[in-house]
Length: 516
Image (cartoon, rainbow, N blue to C red):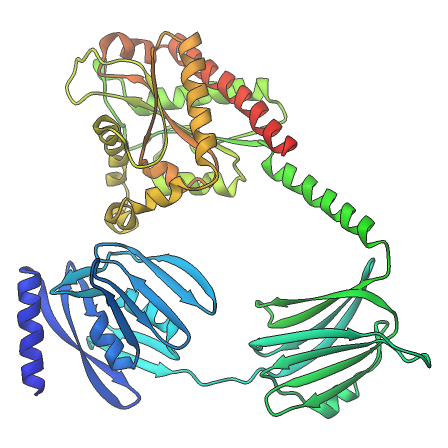
């Protein structure tokens, strides 16, 4: 029987992938062994979702029209799509989209994913941990040991508008509920009741909890599957709210006093609005001169190198912005002739608290000399035109100067959906507005024509969590424009145009968020 199974798996995989090496991977589950069909391709071991689910006692459903496969349990589900890196993960009432390093592959009507992705994702919905031992070439599943949450500590703290009671536990309960019972006649105190389920507690220790400024006594009751805590409150409170802190496994009950709640709420709203306004203040601008060091970028007419033009314009732009916007911090990803990997440029911008990212480059046609000329400004989205895609590929080629670039940027290459996902971020419309302002203002003061705004997938823009544009300042393959870009006059004029655009963008950008 096992031999027949092996032959079926091997023949299937040979038909599906001529160059893949078929494999049968043992799956060890609590002393029992099942077998999962798979194959090895490009140094990655792929496993059958269907076989894996059967071996773990999970269920599957295949949507015949698209071959999408759902793997699900009593606690959650995973939805895989053929030739797609993205998986819809639903656990505990929450749904997220998770990106796999490599897409799911379809073979003879069944989906396969890498062993690494299978272990990560299946563990999220199974009652235990799935691991893969590459040396032994086998999968193992260890069931989780159920832990009943236990109360380990009680604490309380007075606040300006009420109080907070904290119940710390070794694990969070699945359910919690709180209520306040107002006292009647006889001067009895108000009671706060908190029910935690499931939970366990040392009742005698909790009953002897010393009084605080918030409560005079704690009464604990252990039920078969829950714990009820009753707090005798020293003051009256108008309302309550329950929060949880998953980082410390703490259940917190916020008690709001009989104070002027509307006034307190109004003041809190004002504070939050002021904080939000500060968050949207365009107070840090990041300038990214493209290429550098061992990466010269495009080499144009008369041997002019893109890296040198981009740096010169970047330094002029910094000087202009410091003069025009003295209260704004200007950060550069490089201010000398050094090589900075593409992914680190976005990281530098984020760590500096950047609110705007401008990457400076020069364009070129494949053959020179070439009459093509003009400035073009891009924002992040999949390229709409063949020319936009060509230019993005030209700038993205800088990754070849980085160590392990195949591994670092594999997820970017594997599926353009990462660009589509980022295109839905809140920053895209502002990036497009800035791009248009740069086109208008540079062409107004510099001797370069306006080639318009376009969109393309540049690696350097992906990591910047802020409005971001990439400026192709002109064509080094055009003799006249190469001479202009290589001149101090041309570099200063282009920097001035970009600086003027940034000043106008800042005013409109901050005005929009102040009004709204």
